[in-house]
Structures are given as C-alpha cells and as structure tokens.
Length: 396
Ligand code: PLP
Image 1 (cartoon, rainbow, N blue to C red):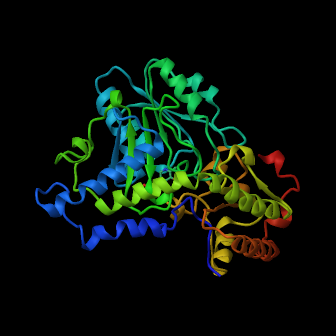
Image 2 (cartoon, helix red, strand yellow; image 1 turned 90 degrees about the vertical axis):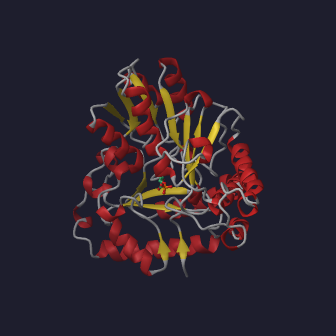
Image 3 (cartoon, rainbow, N blue to C red; image 1 turned 45 degrees about the horizontal axis):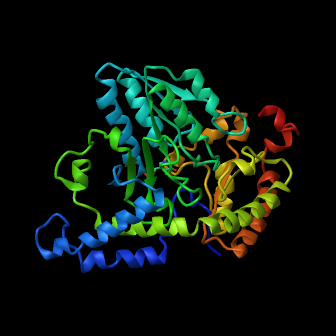
C-alpha cells in the first residue's frame, strides 16, 4: 500500500484542477500578451481564475493579487521590496519575524540583516505558538515590517495573526503573513484584519507546482522584483503561466468548497491517528489539538531518530517527514522542537504526518499498524532509548 501523509510539503493535484488546466498546453497555448486570437482567447479564462482567487480571499477590487512562481518568491518580494521602499530611505531600520518561519522568510530576513537591517526573531512558547503579546515587547516606531506565518508548517499551530496585525497598525508597521499552510484549512478573509501582504502557493492546496501569489493592499504597493513587460500590471513581469493560473483559480475555489470537510472529516482521521500513536509509550505532541489546523501532527517517539522512522515508513510505502522539505537534506533536528528548547534527543525524534482530503481511513489504519511495529523494532535496537529518563516533560 502507498500512503501519502506529507501534504504540508505538497499535495496531489485535484483531477478537476488538472482537467481545467489541460486545454492550455496544446490547444490554447498562445501568449496572453500577443495581439492575435491565440493570445486573446486565453483572457476570459485568466479573468475567471483571478476572480475565483479574489472571491476565495475576499479581496476588494481596489487591492491586488499578483501571481508569482511560488510562495518563496512572494515572501522574498515582500522582504526585498520593503527594504527598497521603506528601509533604504532611512526612515525605518527594523523588521520582526517569528523564529519558526519557513526558510524562505528566515533566509530573506537574514539577508537583510547582512545589509545592516536590525532583525528580531520572535520566540515561540512551550506549545510552539507565537503569543501576540511578545510582539509588543519588540515593535517600535522604527519597525518597518512584521512577518508572522498564519499556520506553522511543522506543527500546524495557528498563530494569532489578527491580533498581531492590529498591533502593527497601532505602531505604523506593515504586516505580512505567510498563509501557505492556512489556505483550505481555515477561512481566509483579507478584509477581516489589518493585513498588508499575504502569501500563498497553489501546490499546497491541490493545485499545480510553480505558481503562487501575493495579496497586496492597494495603499501598500511594492516595488517589483522582476522588471520587464507589463504583465500583472507591471508588478511582476514575465509571460503569464496560463495553465498554472487557471489551475490555481480552480484549486482555490475547491479549497473553499471543501473547507468544512477539511475541518471535520480530515480532523476526525487526524485525531484517530494521533490518539492511537499517543498510546505508544514515551510519545508526545507539542501543540495542543485545539490550537492546530485539522490535518497536521508533529509527534516525537523517544529514542527513535526521525530519519530511522522515516526509513521504516518509506519501506512500508508511507510518506511522512521530519521537517520542511526545503531543509530536510541537512539532517538537522526539527526547527520547532529546537525553538521550544527540547533536549536534542527529542528534537531529533519528531515526525510530521500531514493529511489531506484524499487521505482514507484504510490508509490511517495501515499507518497506525506500521508505526507501532516500527517503534518496537527501532527501540529494540536503540542504544539511547534504554538510558533515557522516564519523564520527557521535565526536559521540555
Ligand atoms: N511557506 C510555508 C509556510 C511553506 O510551508 C512553504 C513550503 O513548504 C513555503 C512557504 C514555500 O512554498 P513554495 O514551495 O511555493 O515556494
């Protein structure tokens, strides 16, 4: 049996999404900027796709959604252009990010730090959550940008972005949220709070890879990263990825339509998996369920290296993860586990299971059986497990 439980890394493309994209490879393949019919016949489809995205996020007409190649590009755009537009002028010199942002935010922040910008990395609490109050301790009149993700990709923890956005507004700082892991898992309404920029990526909600977006408030327009043609109103030049945009529009619409299913049915399967895994001795989860989105579990099995567990799971056809796919070649400990100050042996034992609306009960039952056997086998050969203290809580 093959079981895919790594949906926070990427998701299967929904068959309806694939169907919607197909005509734009070999039939309507014209460049939308060309003057002939091959180009202009794509326009109505692009318009419909963008309308679906505007509707899904409740973006008002005066604001913009700019299509990019991925969330990494959207995140980098915000940081680099805030530097050009707000920091180089000398008015502001400080940005704030959480210490558990995706590498595309952390690395962009570190790059600005190397250029002389002061950067604050907000700490998470023992449940893996950023508390809005901590922002108050660091935000000043010199803060140009605060960037805090809506949902953490490792734990599924939901961060209080609405409260943080309100604090930013009070201090005159811009607020950006990386909503990559929130789309399709939480209701998103950009008019519901003071967000200036919001990042998303189609392949995380059953759309294609290589297409994402940045929501931008009309009054908070950014200098483009890519200069060139007039595509996307000149904000992001480059020939439009027509199949990608059509696919992302369809996927976004479906993400909204299946939100209830995600919140109830996917959660039920996730909770069942978690309940069964927590019955295994010396096993624990950092973020409480009610503070997480419905599809994610980050769980530690004391005494078992995450990579060893992944190996056993992979041999049994199950895909899970030990951390962000962007960092997983490094064999480092899980960044969230490190950030909460977990002892190193625990930080190395975290495994992430992330479900989707395609996950079945049969797959979950199979996974429970495989994990239980793997824990028994790996603890049986673990030199550290026998010597580790019984109580893990004291070490967290
Ligand atoms: N932000 C978060 C929270 C993510 O989980 C990811 C992907 O893992 C990204 C950004 C990067 O997305 P993309 O692959 O579209 O660049």
